[in-house]
Amino acid sequence: MKHTSYLALKYLVVLAWSAFVVFPFLWMLSTSFKSANGVTGGATWLPWLQYEPSTAGWSALFGGPGGVNILRPYLNSVIVTLSASALSLVLGTLAAYGLSRFTFRAGPVRNGDITFFFISQRIMPPIVLAIPFFLMLKTLGLLDTLTGLILVYIALLLPIAVWVMVDFFNSVPRGLDEMAWMDGCTPVVTFLRVILPNAMPGLVVAGMFCLIFGWNDFFFAFTLTFTKVQLLPVSIVALNSSVTPWWALSAAAIVSVAPLAVLAFVVERFLSRGGLAGAVR
Amino acid sequence: MYRQKYLFLLPGLLVLVAIILFPLLFTIRVSFSSWDVYNPGLNWIGGDNFTRLLADSRYWQALVRLSLLTLATVTLQYVLGFGLALLVWRDIAARRLFRVLFLVPMMTTPVVMSVIWRTIFHESLGPLNPILDALGIGAQPWLSQAGHALAAVMIVEIWQWTPFMFLMLLAGLLSLPQEPYLAARIDGAGPIRTFLSVTFPMMAAISTGAILIRLIEASKLMETIYVLTSGGPGTSTETTSYYIYIRGMRDFQIGYSAALSLTYLVVMIVSLTVIAKALTRMVVKD
Image: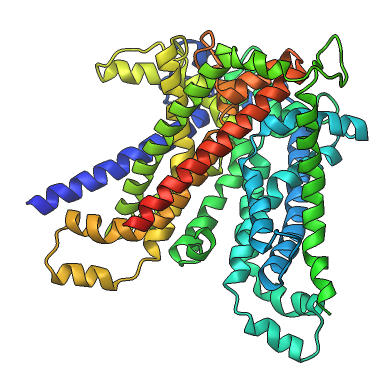
C-alpha cells in the first residue's frame, strides 16, 4: 500500500514537471494558428471550439501580409553560429591537445594556469565586454557585419571548446601518442592521423555546446549590429516591441527554437549510454 | 621536435588574448575618463567615476537584488534538478522520454522564450491568470508589481535552467558505482538513509561543479530582464548587468559604465571565489 502511494506520487511529480515544461510550447503552438480574434478575447487553447484557426502567423513569416522578414536573419544566424562554432572547435581542439600533452612554461605560468585562463573567460559578463567590443569593431570597420559577429562569438565559444576538449584528451591514453612518436610521426602528424579520428565523441559534445551557446546568444548580436545585419533572436525580440502580432511572433519563435530542441534527443542518447559522464565531470 | 607544441596552443591562445584582453585593458583605461555623448574621448579624471559609483544607490540595489535572485534561483534549480534526476534515474516507465523532455528548455533561446513568457504572464490576454482563477488562487498582477515581476523572472529562469542541473546531476547519477548500493541494501538501509549516506556524498563533487557553473551564468542575468520586464516596474527588477547596459548603451556614459563594469567584475570574481572555496571545503570535509 505504501509502495503504491509512493509510486503514484512519483508519477504525479514527473507529470507535473512535464506539464510545466510543455506549457509554453503548447501555448506558442496554439497561438501561432490564431488570428486577432483568437487573441484579443482572452486566452484560448482549443482550435475550432474556442477559436477559428488561421495560418496568418505562418504566412507572415514567408512574405504574406503583415510580413515579418525572418528568413534573412535566420540565414545570418546559421552562418554566424556555424562559422564561429567551427573556428572555435578547430582552435579549441588544437589548444586543448597541446595543453593535455605538452608542458608549457612561461615564468610562473604553467599548463593549469593557461587552461584556467581559457575557461575563466566564461565568468566575464557580456556587458563588461560590450562597449569595448563596440569600439573595437568600429575601429576595424567590422561593426554591423557578419565577420565582426563571428569574431566576437569565437571569444564566447572558444572557452567552452577548450574546456570540453582538455577533459576529453586527458581521458585518452597517452600510449596512443607515444606509439605514433616511436614510429617517427611528428606531433602534428600524430594529432591528425591518430588522435583526431578517435576524438569524435569529445568533438560532438564540444560542438553541441558551441551550437547551443552561439545560436542562443542575443546580447552581442543586439549591441553590435543595427540595420545591415540582423540575427534571428534580435529580429524576434524586435517583433515583441512593435504592436505585438502574437500569432506571427509565436510562429517565428517555433521556427527559431525547433532546430536546437532536436539536440535534446542527441544529449539524451549520450546520457543514457554513459557518454556524457566523462565530458561533464 | 617539441617546437611543434606551440603550433597547437598559440593560435587559440593568441586569438583569445586579442579578442578579450585588449578590450579589458581598454575598459580599465576608459573607466578613468569622462567619455560620454558630449565629450567622447580619453581624458583623465582620476577616480571620479569610482567615487560617483560608491554613492550610486541604484547600482548597489541592483547588485544586492542580483545576488539574492541568483542565490534563490540557483538553489531552487539545484533542488528541483536533483529531485527530477533522482526520479528518472531508474525504475520509471518511459524514462528516456521524460529525460528528453526535461532537457529541452535549456536548448531553447532564452530571449525568444522570454518573449513567449511575456505573453503567458500578460494580465488580461495571457493563459496563466485564467488557470490561476480556475484553481481559486485568483489573477495576479504579474508584470506590474515588483514582487510579482521578480517571481515571474524566477519562474522563467527556473524553467530555462533547471534542465542544466538535471543534465549534470543525472550524468553523475548514471556514472555511480553499484557496490555501495548493494552494501546499503545488505545493511537494511531505507531509501532516505541510502540517499543521505550513499548517493549524496558521492554526488557532492559534481553538485559543487554544477552549482558553480550555474552561479557564474546566473550572475550575468540581463537578457530575460530586458525582454520580460525592462527592469520595471520602476527599477524593481533591474540587475547589475541591466543597469550597466542602461548607463552605457542607452545613456552612452561610456566612462562611468566602464567603472561600473569593472566593479561588477571584481565583486563577481571575489564572491564566486569565496563561494567556490567554501563549497569545496564542505565537500572535502565530508
